[in-house]
Image 1 (tube, rainbow, N blue to C red):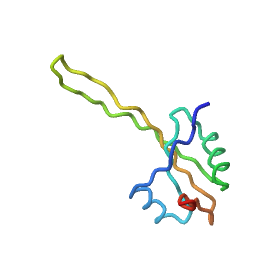
Image 2: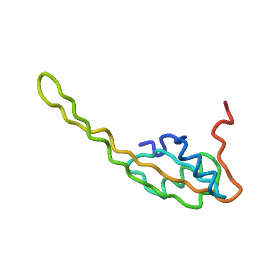
Image 3: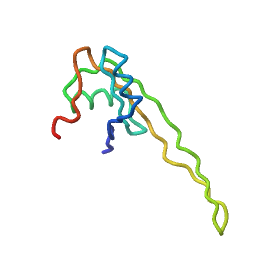
Image 4: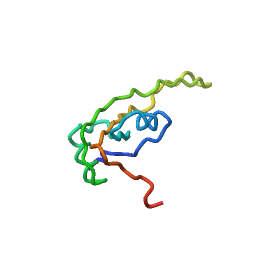
Length: 99
């Protein structure tokens, strides 16, 4: 079985999203094949919250080129997918409660 939700993403941009909105919005790195209903169900079960909406974005992996003695090696980093989760007003997820 594949892991649908990989990890939450904490960056300056994601914290600015929460400061602007009344509703809490969180960003998660998810499996590339995960669907919105699957993501919604997993988040509700993992954190015990009500999810209002799920938005996703697919990010293409960067192209990488390395020049070596034997020639040029070309490759690509892995593709990624992010999910933007909006919670019902008044709810939030505390990621650091067990720390």
